[in-house]
Structures are given as structure tokens and as C-alpha cells.
Image (tube, rainbow, N blue to C red):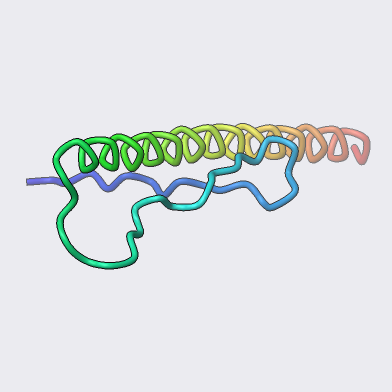
Length: 88
């Protein structure tokens, strides 16, 4: 039984041009009680839309962060290779 752990998502730093923005979490509701069925349905739709938005931003930032790290790694490899050739 091997369980494959998913790699954690990599966020982008604040101010990064590709960083996403997600509005405030709408799931907080002050007060108690049960909402009427139509209001509950609308509330659930808003919460689901927010969760979808968060997932999309997280995926996008992860993709960009991994791409930038891969680009940095390949640039360092090229720099190391070229500097070792020039020393020879």
C-alpha cells in the first residue's frame, strides 16, 4: 500500500506580476440559525465560486513558481557549464 503524497503548492511572493488575488472568504456568517432553502442555495453557490477561484489562483501560482524555478535552475546550469569551460 503506497500512498503518493502530493507536492505542496508553491505560492508566488506578494507583488509578483503573476500573483493572483482572491477576495475575502464569504463563508463566514455572523449569527446563527438556519437560512431559508433559497438563501442557503445562493450562499452555497457563492462559497463554491470562491473555493473554485482559490483553487484556480493556487494552481496558476504553482505553475508559474515551478516554471520560474526551472528556468533559474537551467540558467545556473548554463552559467556553471560556461564558466567551467572558460577556466579550461
